[in-house]
Length: 543
Image (cartoon, rainbow, N blue to C red; front, side):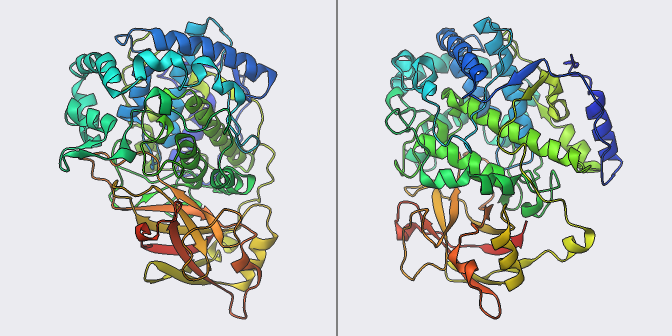
């Protein structure tokens, strides 16, 4: 069994991080080590089904625990509400710690000492597993009614205990919450209700609370991910998200992770940049389950905002995100490439404190740091193979090829951007199994008013087009914002996303003598053209 002592790295992690700190361009092959004690299985497997039964048993217990117990189901969701990072390079790391301690709690409460969180491989199964509509695994079940019937019921139930907890926070915890925009308990609670003091009103799409009847948009009669989300979780998109050969790079098309930020609780000083995996399968799956698009402008189900862990599907979704991080890490090791940052970046990444986790005994863990979760060793688990493990990703480019990698910068015209992609790049993209070209696009962050939070990206659409379906020859992908703007947080005014271009995109299939001329525009998924944002920057780049 590998050590779970938070003060220790495993030998494997030690070798990786010390090599990275020395600035090596490649890491040695990881030494052989004992098999993990726990395995996270695909939810569709026999073992995954067994884990779901234990999961349901423990979730029911957590729902019924008093709110004074930090393991209470809703208290557990507030860990995410108060501390989760999105759009930065701690995204994968923080969620690994959150899931790991939660997994130990489920193991203890269920009595199943073999339990590990099953993963939902949405690439292979683009619908909510049918078992997740049963009993406590469905947040619309009557079991939740005594606690989430409406906002008044939820407030009376949870707020007094949360206020008492808030009064016990350490100065370090308070400092992190201040950076997040939560200088008082009231600031945090305003995000639960979406009340904006400066406006003296609420913003329906930002409500983190969802009543029992509206806690999840997808249902037994409508369990499938919509067509936009199905594209975002598809093999080409996920494969493109696994292509980067650097944990972090300032060029987001080359980075496995999202933006580098001062801390996991602060927004970038420039543009928020979402990696492919966070910006596409992560964001769109959250929002689809919560009803973005169908229910615009809100309110939405739990999965759309930062109380998303109230929906038990959250943990299966993030188990798959964590699995994809492992798939990428293992790919890097096979190619003898670094799977962590190098030099000072490694130190900066690793020393970030996480202060809000709760263990299986209902005790606060205290200070952990990001380096504790660089590998799966702390929680001693691995994954049953799933999509991506056998993906035939191309070897990294040689230095010469990398230097010649193409970038086609767009010119802004009105709300659109135009650029010309070379014939060579277009032909190579058409022939590739995993997309070779991606659109890097920057747009203003939604204001949180009455508009939506999802926008389709169109290429060479006829003038006047305000709405398309994902099977359109002009459809490139969808940009979808997860969560809400936090009052007081100095959120960047812009956000950047990477959209892997479909190989079937008509605009790239018949380039002219000078290349493929592209005109890129955004349209809201609901077709309301008056809410179309202006593109701030756009480029097509080689992944």
